[in-house]
Length: 246
Image (cartoon, rainbow, N blue to C red):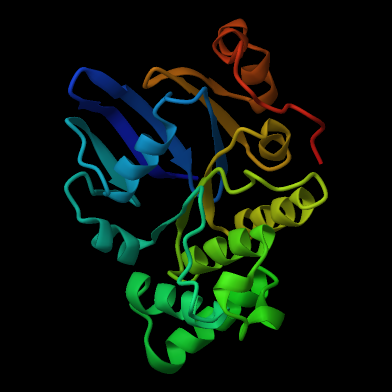
């Protein structure tokens, strides 16, 4: 398969703080890449660069064979790149369905009946259809995470970026989320997933990348990456959970 995403020499700094330094990697279409690293490693910055929220100081981003380095965030969303955020921020006074329809209409440019159908499908995939008429502000954390994912899915992405979507969930709540992400990959959606709960990543991803100080420290087979002495060293004093893969 050809790569859906190719990052070459990507760099970003804020004053003297380097958050991305000469990052180069590719992601195969239909695969799942996990990203780990200590706090401040540049993980979320990388997602912001891919989605166009931030502009790089150097380097290129090629998506689906096209150079999108200077493309706007909105245009990237319409091209099929979606992102969920670590802290869900739904429109709390709107229903679950209305929240997802906003994603379909304004993120995926799917309006009217087409938008309703797209929103309903995203709710079905994430198990939220029974809660469609519930105000988003009444949802428990797991369902807010599902809503965050549903809003991203409503843009009909080819590539979805997940930023610590498992954070804050209990061990009992993790398996349904893991199965949903597996289902996305099996449906052909390419996944890039940042997560501190490593055993959740190991249950899904094909490759694992460790970032440290804005640089790629290691990338490859997930379990081999986590056994790397350099990776173990950067995690000393950090909180992460290897656990058992589901």
